Length: 194
Image (cartoon, rainbow, N blue to C red; front, side):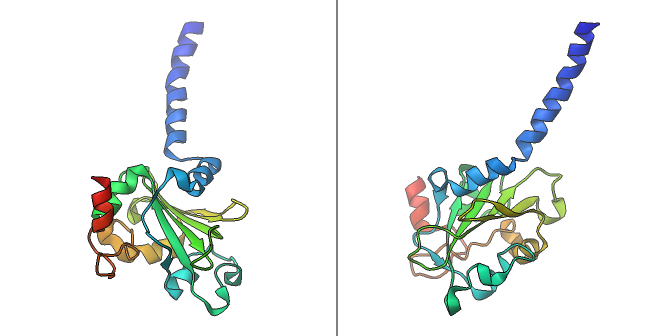
């Protein structure tokens, strides 16, 4: 009888560990998104954000004046990707593999080193939010490393939906050799990877 009980518990344990692997804990998300040494930097220098993006990339209900108000100045960001999403981002593909993560570390000025905010997109499993390509969005405070918002964030979804051709990922921060935003791969970065 004990043997039958143990055998019947094994599938439950396997299912439980599988579901945890698909959705990282808050601690794992913070660790993976804020450790810039573990990510691949895409931007050569901080990218100046559009004012509309600057205001939209914040958690719902959060005081916009506390993030990137900049006293009339622009906000900037550095963009990073993890190993799983690197090829899709570089090549401008229309599908990212599950586990892909793209991080924007947002800066108050171009010369700042410490981000005041991280916005994160992580590609989840096929049942997470299929209607919106299964991206989980997160906003993490740069100073306290606390998650301010996480999940299916409507403001993030509505902004990124216009980039459906590239699986909801904007690539405006990727520059061609002539300095114009790239719609294809970034030549310099591609050469570094080969």
